[in-house]
Length: 402
Image (cartoon, rainbow, N blue to C red; front, top):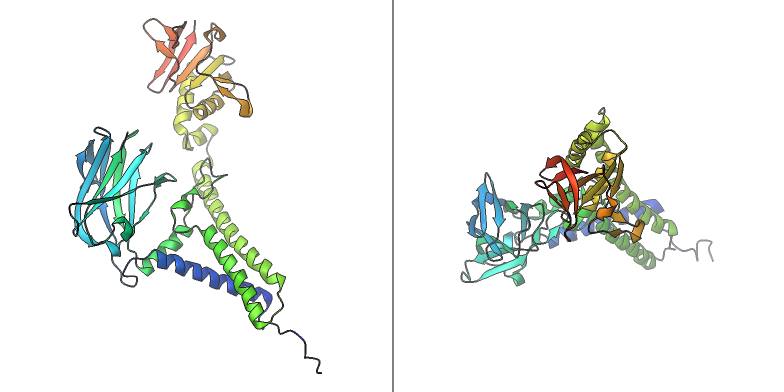
């Protein structure tokens, strides 16, 4: 028997090259799958995208008006509001994706996209719109939902209440050719995600409107690459090299971490541009909650030098916390009882807790009113406390207890 007999065959490539090659191939396969599942009927044609501006819509129910290129929907009529637009007819199978651009401070509970077809003009079809990560999630429409034939008209419908005006900027039918979809996949994955207050928990919350997040795509590719290696090793009779498995996982991790570091770098550059070389007050005015700081400045200028007892009352606890921070070193308290998870919100402070010389800031607060004519703080149960008005703004009152 020769020395070579009985020795298991080994791959010609080094372990790291096998890991990189399989992961790259698997990632390419995932991208192809994403593209094929999000293209229209003419994958290799280049049907141009088109956009319907909000000002092209007509009000059919409710209250509102066009504003430059947008339409402002302001109210509902008997629980319903609707905007409709006549459009150049187009084939539904070429444009299976619809993207609404809508701005509002508070989205309505029920919002729906409605359309008509040439083949069935007496019937309307609809699909609910989801509000996701501060925007309307793109719609992926199918023939089973009635998205077929020739589309001749589209509409936007609001059911129920309208908590805040709705600005309809546009509705877009993007090109769904393979080339355009491929570009969109890469654009989504390269998007800069501004870090919001909840970013520590959901750093890439906007990814939920993507075809498939890069984290999910990388996870799929990693699983496929590892599975392909195990099957290839079994087929070729190779001994399984654990380094290939770990390298595949590590490469995927590094890819995602590099994307995270790139996003952090962009955030750092924006922070430098926004705050570098500015004083503390100028930095506060450049921050997202600058209106809160401006309100706090008005309150501070209206207060005597510290220390003074200041009670900040607001229906929004986060707003009260931020105002209290800006008002220090005054002796600031908020309308809370208890601490930590056991903290309990109090409807209104006990009038007996307030003493002469205390300052009370009512900031968008509904539990206590102020009667300017009688110079009284008024509680819902009828209790009152004499107080003089120090500062009056549309969103806040500052009074001093007499």
